[in-house]
Length: 158
Image (cartoon, rainbow, N blue to C red; front, side):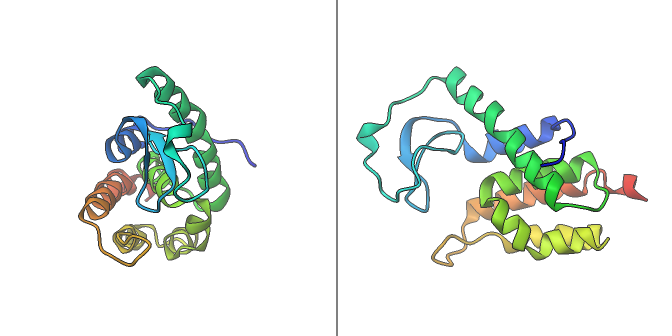
């Protein structure tokens, strides 16, 4: 992994806003046991939630602070073209939500890396479906926020 640059506040804002804080374990939309700001407790679908404990807000912030740099590193490794802080923040939030594999395989990444940064912003809106191909209003709202942050300082590339 290459060294990462500082994580923009906007990345943490996006993740906290859209993941939401849940102190008690719950199943995410894929049935994965999760807690806090989307912290995965087990990759076993529908694993028994009773074996996991609730967490404090402080513990949840600790998980987030430990996990976000990993996703930032994935962005730094997968995006080879120059990007602004807004682009970086949005891509961290996106990758935290969909996973590094999906960023790696995405048209979004390919477009950014070939220099089509402005046009790539529209790719966020393709990622609004759950695993059953149902369009989710919450994902659409999240992707609109991510796209807005992504485009917020894109003029700095020119």
